[in-house]
Image (cartoon, rainbow, N blue to C red; front, side, top):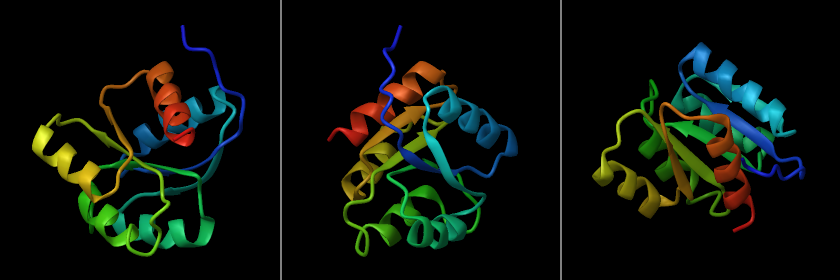
Length: 127
């Protein structure tokens, strides 16, 4: 079982699915992290990141308006310290590698469990 890191982290949850955002909010609650905000599409992620300055972004790759890779490419030039964790249901190594090369710090595959999500956040924040 994962030993929880009780250092609160502010997280922006970005997924077009209400259900996934709800599950991720519950996981953040379990991990004692703060949900800085939520985004339903790529444009909202960019807008909210600039306003909220979260420590972590949990970013779905399949987002409306701008997909996850486009969001990363838009954020990194102006926010090079952004810690983005991509979340994907499609484990396409080529796309995941493109995201990591563009600046994402880690990825989580769907379906995910709370222990893995919290571990990846902890590992990413400590980098």
